[in-house]
Image (spheres, rainbow, N blue to C red):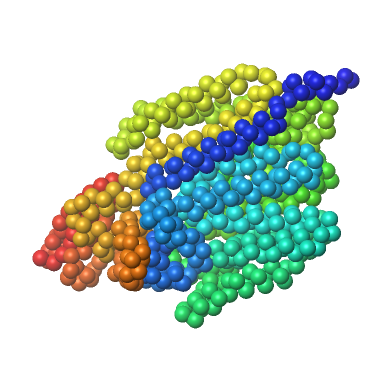
Length: 606
């Protein structure tokens, strides 16, 4: 059999330096698009507005020790305060607005990609083959990861601390192999500091998300070697730094430890009614988390499924044999890391899609390995690969077809958007620009689909990475107004502040499903900025605001209307409210403003 010459390989293989340069340029483009779109859409998700409002309370109350959530009339102690501190710090630096609320998640997303790149570099140096260098690009363009990097949540920081912990763990193992005791202690101290950050962000679950994959690896290899670290030192640093806050809060609120460590971290996984003080759980059938995994990692999910496409038990036994006997310990760690979060939440009914976020860096590293092995086989057929020839063909087919199919789907969605009747305004300029971008992507994908040249496959990888990034960005730019009208009270509060500013930040009664935390956040935005201005003059004092109420039926006790009260209703619930003058003739109902899906009425005694 004739072997290809070195010259022929040089002519058919794209320069690795050029590929890496293109990858870095695309990552820069992704970060720029994400940064620009941070404040485009209002805070509309319930979690976003709740956490942003809790961060506001730090400034309004001039109390950074105990986070406070007005709706439940209690301190918010279901989670440690680090995320709220970070958002509050951004308010101090940039003012209180949508953009600054989302800055922490954006920075955490960038740092997660950086640590994923460091892990890829480490694994490349260990193996001698560049099989993981696509991972940062894959992670940054995964649909869920890119979308959540511009939101307000705690799970992006969990993802960052787990990824950084894995990097420190790999460096510890390398230092042990080199018998460098000083480096081992140094990286163990770095690991301890990372675990400290994770614990102050979401408590023990952040440590479990890191230690869990190591336990799986130890069970897989039937050896406790993966767990041989100075855990006493890691725990000593972690608990030593975090203990003062936990002790100080327990002294102020004696129920804190019981609720935080027992209710939130044990009972919530075994009881649907575990005594949640801050809302209701998101209950789904057992195993729903795996559907989140399949959807959250798109468009890269099909590449991970390639080795498992078989119909017989023999095929799956063959796959297990290859994974068990022919993969390195580092690759097995990546597999354990990728599956731990889904496994951990498989039997949990109270879940949200963000729980899988910590698995995405490992999935990106594994996908990068699969695609890189395929590219290597394309340009050097005589080289040995971890994938079979059938699997390599399948990956090549995916690289060829997926960009074209995604482009076609984008065109269909765009066409539907243009012809579908809608009473809600859409950003026309953004839609025109989006149309041009999608058409260009379709043309590029179609040309790449038709080509069989060797250099096209890296282009197809870049096209795949572009689709979710541009898709999410276009969605935010074009439909931010729609999101505001459907999910946010920002438009209504703007109108209310123009017509009756005295009611824009006052207590309100919420009837049925009005998004209460959106009212809190936007109603108090001006107050927070005023308080920040007073802080600069050293004149700020604690501002204890009146409590808010929510009800699903009109209150039987109408004494709350002895003073004028703003009642917020959805358009769907508005007819119910308009019947009240007949039932309560002593009350006067006066419409204030109506915007989007919500209306505001002023109710008072005649």
